[in-house]
Structure formats: C-alpha cells, structure tokens
Amino acid sequence: MPIQQLPPHVAAQIAAGEVIERPASVVKELVENSLDAGAKSITISIREGGVAEIRVTDDGNGIPPDELGLAFRHHATSKLSTVEDLNTVSTLGFRGEALPSVAAVARVVCTTRPPDSEAGARIEFRHGACVGQRHDGRPPGTSVQVADLFGDLPARRKFLRSAPAEAARIQEVVTRYALAHPEVRFTFSVDGREVISTPGSGRLQDVILSIYGSEAAGRMLPVSLADGDVAVDGYTSAPELNRRNRSYTTLLVNRRWVYDRSIYYAIEQAYQGTLPDRRFPFAVINISVPPEQVDVNFHPTKREVRFRNGDRLFSLVQRAVREALIAHAPVRTATRSFTPVDAGPRPPSSPESPRLPSTGGAAPRADGVALSTTALAPAEGSLRDVLADLRVVGQIRQTYIVAEGGSGMYLIDQHAAHERVVFDQIRQRRQGDERPSQPLLAPMTAELSAAQAVTLESYADLLAGYGFALEPFGDRAWLVRALPAGLAARASPDPAAALCDLLDAVAVEQVVMDREDALAATVACHGSVRAGMTLAQEEMDALLRQLQSTENPHNCPHGRPTVVHFSEYQLEREFGRR
Ligand code: ADP
Ligand code: MG
Image (cartoon, rainbow, N blue to C red; front, side):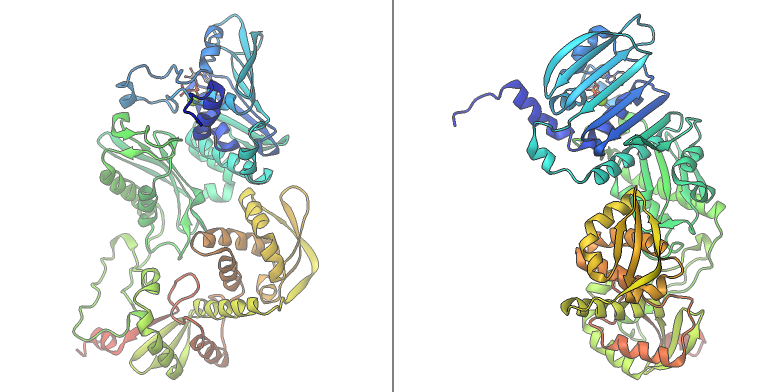
C-alpha cells in the first residue's frame, strides 16, 4: 500500500481509541467535564453496561451555543491556551480530546445552556459525522447522551465484557468521583435502578455513609496532616475494618482519582502489624499539592501522575495515616520477633532481631512472604524431619499448637497448617474426578456486590466443578443450593456470607495465582480449621503428620508461615542463661 494520509474520520476513530477504551472511559470523561464546569449536581444513567446508552446531566456552567460545534473538535478546550498553562492547570481536563473522541465512536446528542444565556443549543453526531445542530430550550447545564458505543467498530465491541462487568467498572468510576467531590450531588442509575445517591453536603463522611453504609462509616478515622504547601486529608479505617483487596482504597491528588503504587504502599505501611495478613485498609485519601509540583499530562488517561517530590509525599501520607491510627485506634502491644522455621535455626553467634520500640504499636510480622520462595527450599527437608519428631505440648488461644522438638519450641498456626493440607488435597482431587458436593437443606440467597458478581461469572465453570450449585436469582442475587462437601460444615450457619467472602478472596488470589490455584487456595482457606477452634490431642498430632507430607509444609497457600521456631538459644538468652 502506498503511504496516504488517513481520511479525517478514520484518523479520529483511531485517536479515540486512546481516550475511550470502554464505557467507563466515557463516563469518566463526561463526569470530569461536569466537575470542571462547576456542577453541583451530576446525574449519570446507563443501560446495558453503558453500551446501549450513557447519559450524563449536570447543572454546570454550560457551553455557549456558538462554541458548541468547536467543543467537539480535536484539541479544542477552554481550559488552557499556552504550554505554560500546563504547569498550573487545575482542571481535570485540558487536552480537548474527550468530546471529539466520544463523538467518533458512538451516537452522541449534547444539549447545553449557560445560565446567563437566553437559549440553549443541541448538537448530534453519528459515529463521527455531525448530523445536526439547532437551538434548544433546556435548564442551565449540560446533558450528553451517548448511544450505541462502538456501534460501527465491531472489533472494539468484542473486547468489552458482559454488561454487568462494564456496569461495575462504571460504578467504580462514579464511586471514586463521588468520594472525591462530597460537595457535588451524584446520582447513578443502572437500567433504571438507582444505585448511588450522595447528598452533596460537602462532608466526606456523608458520601462514605451513602456508598458504603453505616458500619463502614462508623469505623473511619479522620486523617489530616499538612507540611508546608502539601496536605493530606480524608478518612482511613480503624484496623478492625479491613478488606480482602485494595479496591476500597481511593487515592486522590487534588481531587483527581489516581493510581500510585508507592502511595498505596505508604498507606498500607502505616498499618503494618495492625492488620491481619493479606487484609487491606479502607481509605479515602486526598493529597493537595500545588499544581506545579505534579505532572498530570503523563499518562494517556491521566490515571497516573508524577510528583516532583515523591519521597516527601510518601512519608507525609504514611505519617498522616499512622497518626490517625495512633490518635484514634487502640494501640497493640509490641512483641518480639520470631525466627520463622524456614530460615533455619540461627547459629548462636548471629545477631538477634533487636527489640522493637513499643511506641507506634508495630508488631514485627513473620509473614514469610519473601522467605517462602527463596530461602526455604534448602530447609524443607529439615522441616519435614522436625515435624516427624515434634511432641505436641498443647494449644494456646485456640489458634497455635505448641510443640517441642530437637532444638527448641515450635508454634504451629493451626489454620495455616490445615489450609496447606486441604489445598494439597484439593489439588490432588482435581487430577482425579471426585466432586463431593453437599446440598443445603434450604437454598439460601446471596446478595452480591457488583464486583462479586463479576468474579462469580468468571469462575462459574470452576465453581461448579468444586461442587457449588448456584443459580441466578434476579438482580445480582444468587441462590446457593449446594456447597463443596469440605466447605459445607464450616460455612454454616451462613453459606451466603461464606460465598461472598470466598468471591472477595478469589479476586485477591487471582492477582498472584492462576485461576485454578486461586480458587483452590480460597476453598482450602474456607474449608480449613479456623483459629478459635479447640483441637483434641489426636487432631493436633494428625495435623502435624498431614502437614509433614504436603508438598510445601513451610507455608500456607498464601505464603504465610505455618510454623515458627523459638530456638533453644533464643529461649536461653531470654532467660538470661547465656
Ligand atoms: P477538555 O475537557 O480537555 O477541555 P473536552 O473535549 O472534554 O476537552 O471538552 C471540550 C470543551 O467543552 C471543554 O473545554 C469545555 O469548555 C466544554 N465542555 C465539555 N463538557 C462540558 C460540560 N459538561 N459543561 C460545560 N462545558 C463543557
Ligand atoms: Mg474533558
């Protein structure tokens, strides 16, 4: 083919791909425009996951009728005019690409009227072509209706997920922007049903309440810390309110929803030692920085930003969250460090872990995640040997088995150990064809969140293989008719809650494991003896024997250690015998 310049509508559809990846991108762009227009109220409604229709209506400052055509041209914006403006831009948009991109890939009708304008205007596009523009009466503000998204781009359509999955992504966008802007009233409905409605009171706790409910709202701790021209504010959860994945942490920079790995980490670090393993805080954190200290024109969809002084922000966020926890949440007693058995007995000459200061309440974690894959392999044989020789002394806190062996004292986490055993059994069974399933006496209904419904859909086939019998039962509700036999006993009395928890857990596991292992690990976890159960002597002995013959006795499937070791040396040192 000879080189040729593409016809404008082809070029526009290609360019649109960068901005509009899926229905949620349309909603993000339109909501950002409404916020930039100073709206006090934004109403979003979608049909069929946003593919059939997306409608965003605001009461913002509108577009002057004579500029409406221009607003749909590429690189047409009212938000900046020089390159220097980019350094200080404080609006969410500034590239002038959203409206033309949406108009290139859908049927779009926009009506708008500035408050001081006599009349409004209406413009209509069909997959890139303007098909009409006229005066129109309407209240002040702007409405954009987007229909038949990717209607003439079948290849793009094919990449979309199911309508509930796309709707869930849209709901996430609306949720995050509602949290970012408590002063704006957000209303969101899906196929005619209202799912989000915030009061626009300006109080973040009101938004948290309306979106996440009173239980969560009641356990959020206020965060507020400033250092010079940078400030961190928002809410973060008391440690007992935690979640199985990161999706409950909303990070905002100058009220723009962003993703920043290192700041997420700063938030999580602030919780170190106070959260159960693999649980994540619930948080809404806004960082206010002077616009010139952050580059927002760096990521195609502005999802990531760059900071001029990232380290300072990292420690400010960590301190802010930490101080909120110390000021408002009960502080834990510090403990001393254990030697995970994986690391092998330490030679007497090696330095012991220093005592931790008791301020801040950080308990050292022997979570073994880093140890599990690297340091462990050589010691594995020796742990098997150790397990073979252990003598069970008793159980403490219905959680740990105390045992003594060749070189000191061993604590075994009964849940982690049993999880490993069940996980191995499940994996072996998968090779065979056994699918023990246990019907419930009375089927139960499980109400799923949007995210849980998505997980359920994508694991439907595997879940059935494990012995789950599930039936759709209306809007995001499922009927649980049977559970895997191993799970049924532990899941009672609330199989529906067990299913919800399991789906949340799978969503986390699938980040680090393949689909099948993610489900196996989760089912193992839910079917294992929990902390808090009294075990008989024989049960403890049996558990240690079973653990001994697993593929990797060192860790549970999530990488937590199953056994920790107090060496004889440690004990003697503690008692001043050395
Ligand atoms: P950008 O937001 O980057 O400027 P857009 O293509 O999203 O580019 O919008 C182009 C222009 O149209 C904006 O700069 C703004 O002037 C106007 N506009 C878009 N949406 C709205 C709205 N909801 N209310 C008022 N003005 C709007
Ligand atoms: Mg915009």
